[in-house]
Image (cartoon, rainbow, N blue to C red):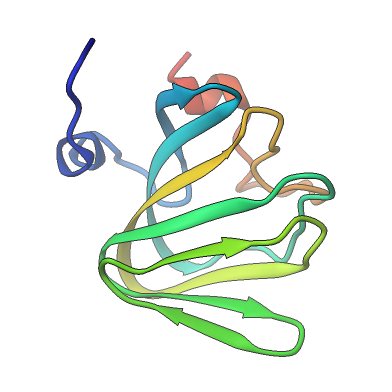
Length: 121
C-alpha cells in the first residue's frame, strides 16, 4: 500500500480547475485540484461531492446563499444542487466524489475535464 501526501500531490498540479485523481476508495475518487477565479454554474444530478480546503479560501455559491470555506474546512454539495465554486485567490482542495461524477456535471464548458484527463492519460 502506498502512502500519499495531499500537499505533494497538489505540487504536481499545474493547471487551475483541472482535478487530478490520486486515489480511489470503493466507488469514490479522491482528487486534488488548484482553483483560482470563477468556475461554472453546474450540478450533478445523482452525486454528492465533498470539498476539503488544504490551502487558501473557497466560496461555494448557491442560488440562495454562499458558503465560505477556509483551510481545514470541508463542505458537501448535495446532489442535484446548482452550485459554483469561486476562489478569489489560489486555493488548493481535495475532492471526494463518486467515479461517475462528470467534472462540470450537466454543463459543457471549455473548462470541462474528462476522467481520462483527470487520471493523467
